[in-house]
Image (cartoon, rainbow, N blue to C red; front, side):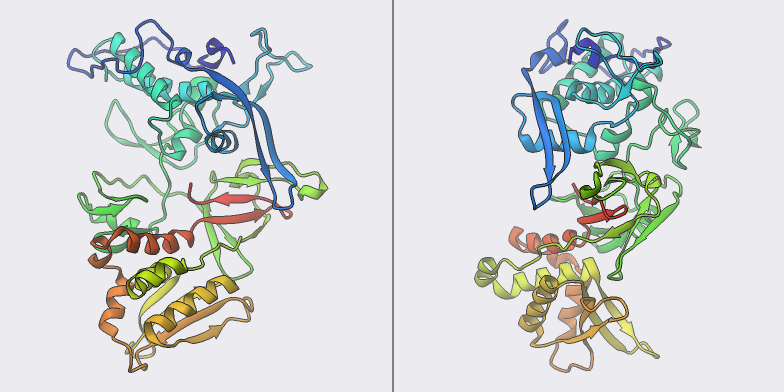
Length: 446
């Protein structure tokens, strides 16, 4: 796609403010007077998703990315981050495509140039609009360096930025308010957004009881915000990092997809779901749709391979087994005092398929020499709870408390031990298959 077409702007505005004490930027990767997108060689690729049977459920051609990009990166951009509707379309000669009634044709993004431009361009626009930059030249350098580093895969925002940022500024796409808030840059007051995308929600949306793995144990997200636990160290998927700030961004309505095995998935209505309006064999076509567009459809959970890595456990049996079971308990288990007088200590893990059952029972055997099983047949024959309680005299309950609460022993643990905990803990929240009239996939972690 021609760079000029990929970098068009819907929101034209020149009412900008600059501040001599504002931000100044210097070039590191770009050149003065050279469009940052012209510093790459591009090629057109195809992106395809197939079922295990080989059937195609997603297919997009002519995806424009730098030649240096991997196919995996191309697939993620095409399948997840391209805006799929409402984007102006152009002919090869650069003229606007028209529908039969002469209205402008709208469709999807097709180039990384478009995505990087709407991100960096919107951030620059906000900076100029509210006096963040020292000069217009600093704003241009800011844009050029960001456009370059995004296109070169040197930096990346979180997923909601890819989804939402710049849709109004670049394409004029908007919609009704979604219940989110923003801090008004003029007044500094927390304000409820009046629409979807002039002040989009560029951050992940979390429930109060979303579990966060911290140096103090596993805490609810809401507790972290309410108690202002700034400087607490949390696990970000790769390492322990400090919380720099917290903010309550309002309340969003949640929808629950109940699964036949007793599990459930909670979504906000704008959560993107890989879905189709009918089964693939009936001609269904997959695409990313917001949950509110597919409410009322059935869902199905995909079994996740959680088998223990036997070769590693053989080298460091007990400690790795402990870390792995802690991941199970934290991800889909329980620990506490129960019964009429709350004197019986119980802990256990819920499993929903044979692989999970086999993995968890092996860990209980290794660590405690046994277990009991409760099958919830009213839910499903495979919905089983593996547990132990304080009536089992041969268990060291002090160690169980430490394991279940995931205290500092794990933060100080070696990488292999952390990996076993996190591999299970996060897999409990990874992939679901949502089937609208039997079809769709939801990736909860990317």
